[in-house]
Image 1 (spheres, rainbow, N blue to C red):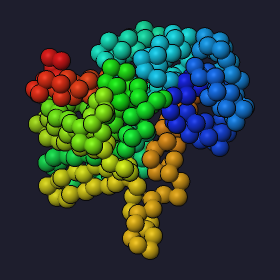
Image 2 (image 1 turned 90 degrees about the vertical axis):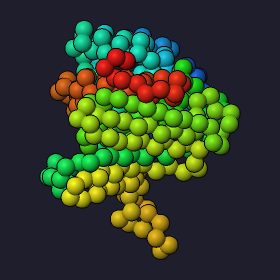
Image 3 (image 1 turned 45 degrees about the horizontal axis):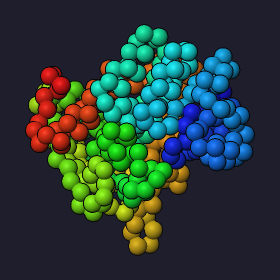
Image 4 (image 1 turned 180 degrees about the vertical axis):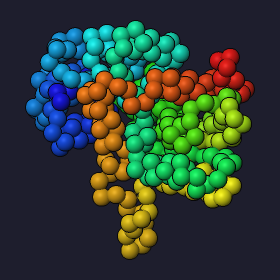
Length: 325
């Protein structure tokens, strides 16, 4: 497959390109609005640099990875969707209802497939827990919990500040909360009925958004759940826990089945596999090949709306009913 990369705003496009290359695919074109980054990427990976996204020949590529800053990323994605090119956009899918409506409308109008997800949707540990759920090992699910702990110190200065800005990158509630919500959606579905979010600045007082948040959820079948977003921490850890009538099951990434002498978890030898980067690219390439979306558009829309509602709840101090949001 021949893939184009549009935007080098953070580390994901570099990781994706490495994964694509080692699985026999080629990144043929690249664009970025920072000349130094564009030159470095082009020389490292042998991709042809272009002066604007419009200069990428749609007829010569099989798919595009749009990983620029928001809101410009929405413009890039819609342009390629309109040109019939299967498109992957890194998380979050959108940070406003207007952005979400615009990109979802383009997908419906053109029929071009689109994927936007947290890479953790394809983390092997999550999929293993899902298999236990599908096998009925937990019995009736009583409640669920997810954690998304990720340092945001590098968002306190340029060029990363846009991700901390609620109006541009969504801030921690959306930009990091998406990891927890995607994991819970894989486990119990996306049909959230009600949401309440509380957030604060515990360490990064200068943050434009927050470095701590708790998102309480209620699904349509009355299942309660919670997402803990801890971004004032130094490290990163993700996980989910299912409290069932018959069993309580959980996982964490990095997982702890391989440990060093002190008992510290090492996780998979290939972090790109463990954190779901490899699985995400496998799903993307499959979408380019079959033109079928690996995640239904309706699910992506629901999850984006829940995160936008969480931002609204944190700002107003009131719960949000998804039916009227």
